[in-house]
Length: 218
Image 1 (cartoon, rainbow, N blue to C red):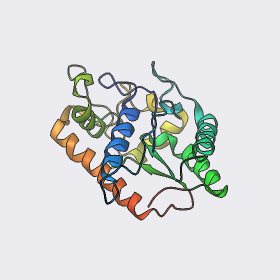
Image 2: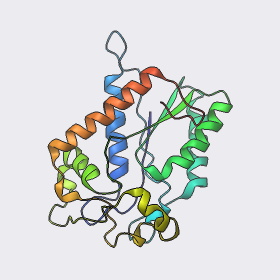
Image 3: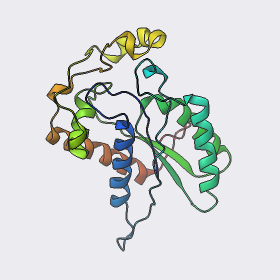
Image 4: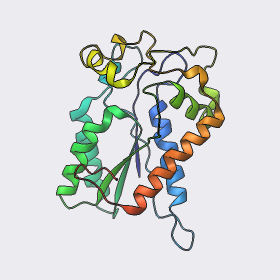
């Protein structure tokens, strides 16, 4: 299992590696759940890939984006190397901007006969970025790194309404603080619930192991 995240702004209150932390925590919890009949671990969790495709956040300090092409190439070469000894690969994705690279890389790996797939860290009703959802999860897994004295609500409009402006101007075009949603409603208890939903969803998809045409587990 390879957690894949990003290094990008998450408002004034969350760390730059928020997506990476979530992907790593989900992968570790997922691996702990997926044991064989004797209780032994079936999956190894690799060190996380902490840089992703984050161009939409480039206007904010702290963001480091490697872009779609570079990330896809890294994932392909990672997969080719790891499958010299690993029977199966699962990329655990914590950042929505990585999807294009994830699709491209895993399609290629699968076309080469490698048993690779990817799974997203998702939860129902999640807001878009650094809002209630991510802040709650961080309060659960990394509470000391959430600066609650600095949090503030951002643009709460539906993502579909924001996308036209974001395509031309990135997140800065729709939110001065870099937040899409309201982190001030976040709680650790809600974060535990959301995190459990993320892990449960991945457990079900890995157990079925039915990658789609893009390599994403359904």
